[in-house]
Image (tube, rainbow, N blue to C red; front, side):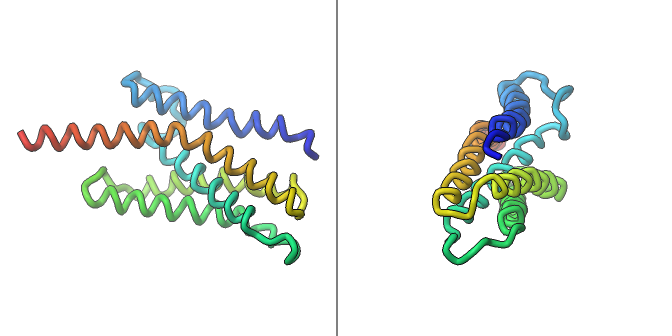
Length: 173
């Protein structure tokens, strides 16, 4: 089974790398709308959901006790989806306070990122055995993918903060 790991890493990192290029290009001011698979500006929501889902699944995988027996096969994927959905709702609540433009579709796109994370979490769970070493390997795999997705999300979030500060400065004038 571990021989599939390079293929999995390649496939899983292609989507975030593509979306990261589109997101960074959009933040830098280039017109990236033609290649963006989501409506303009929504790639960050997908990546944010993916990041939250992968991190939550990795933490739950690391914290679960293998001595208690095998965990339910759906525990990590459901954790990933729930974390992404909660993150999407939290972000839209923040947007409703004036930070941005709250939209229900943003919650759906963020949750879709959690679905992608759920697929990765389910596959990682099948790759690594239910032993202390296997749990640590699976958790580190999921958390490292979450850190990879965090890079463009952080860049985009900083860009949003800058836009809001600029907008508020113009409103004060």
